[in-house]
Image (cartoon, rainbow, N blue to C red; front, side, top):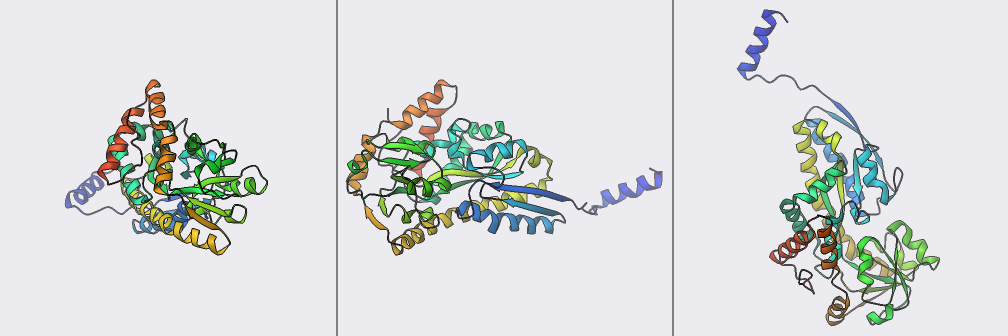
Length: 352
């Protein structure tokens, strides 16, 4: 560089005149094992992707997206690994299937019978991440960062037989996912592990007699066609998934682009939560139109069911403690934060 060029460049920098932005183009793939019928996935396509593109364009850059949902790249149980390896840069990771790799994130699934208010639950999860660094570190161990935790609306029973009392579950095969299988420990039913895309066929072929699942998927997945009895017990809204980004990708991005992505992800988190809340009511209404029958278990029956369960939360916490993970700290912090948020659990899962 000549002395004149050096002098000119120094003058520009000292004068505060901004140098032109170097336009960059990125090609990103975002994946999900679930189809866009799942509201957390549809909100990625409807809000996250277009908003990130628009705001990054305002910075002078371009993002070309490939959206691959419904297991096009990986099934629900394989999204974590696909994002970790860089097969995809972004993913909708259903962490409820990842109890071995992300045990601390299963916290709502071992503390059922809380609130159906999803926004409150997600507010608690945000605070829990802030207080327990080990939760963020576990995702980093899988080479990704959580951009937005994603919750789902409350769980109920959807069955091929009527339930007037919890004893009516005895002898039946009930499908569900992740640690929700533990919710059947208080009754004489057989829990069967599965996932949303499999539930309809599993019930129609007799593999399951019913499922425990959340309200907003009952109509979109047409579960009521093969299981017309919906019994509202309100296991509570759950923290089930997360929108994540590959850490190598994230670390390669300029600060202003990272800021845009995180801002949109925060919006996406709230949009998804609102969508699940609204979708739950609409889903049950459509199921009734399609011939479903909805009944409510009483508060007394709900409380009795909760008390019949072993203390699955303490068992979970002590097992993790023995592995050197902060299970008890996460459990007690979550219950404290829930109480501070006005969430009442039917049972105090932190009690010894």
